[in-house]
Length: 181
View 1 (cartoon, rainbow, N blue to C red):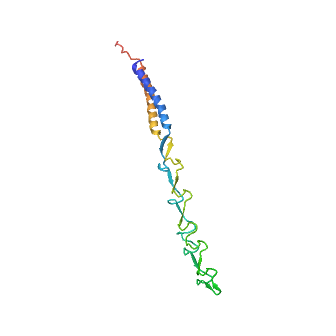
View 2 (cartoon, helix red, strand yellow):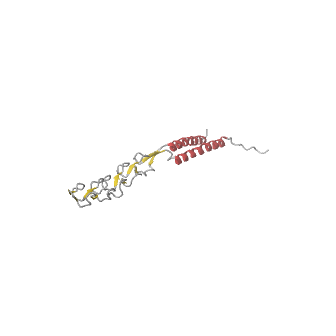
View 3 (cartoon, rainbow, N blue to C red):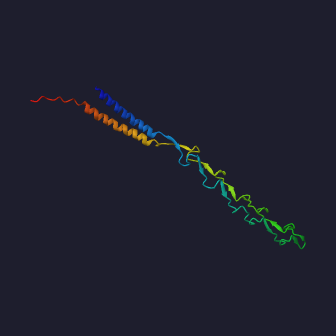
């Protein structure tokens, strides 16, 4: 077998090897940055802002029942603290009745006057663990090496037939020129 035939057989074998290696490379999963959380492992809480929810019972932390006043003028004595029989029993002589809702503080009893509550969805952090990467910031992605693997396989696919075509051309016996008659 001539040297160039061995070389062509080696080229064909290399082409077949490149096809298989290219397929393996294209199917290999690769660890990449999570696209959902941009590699942070955290996603913004969808239900709150900075870990806080606006209080659903008030608008600014003030008691809605008394508008933040803490109470009102006693209705029994009209704010004088005195009744015809003596000290007013409704206000104890102060002329003032504490608000039944806030107990006289003027603050919303639901949020303690803050105007907001800690978000229960994110526990006040303002973020949640990314569900796509489980908080790691990286995921395994199949197909990330599809193009390099495809190129390797394509080169292999082109080498194999080329080697066989060239080998057929070299197998032809040389033509011996005939003497003129």
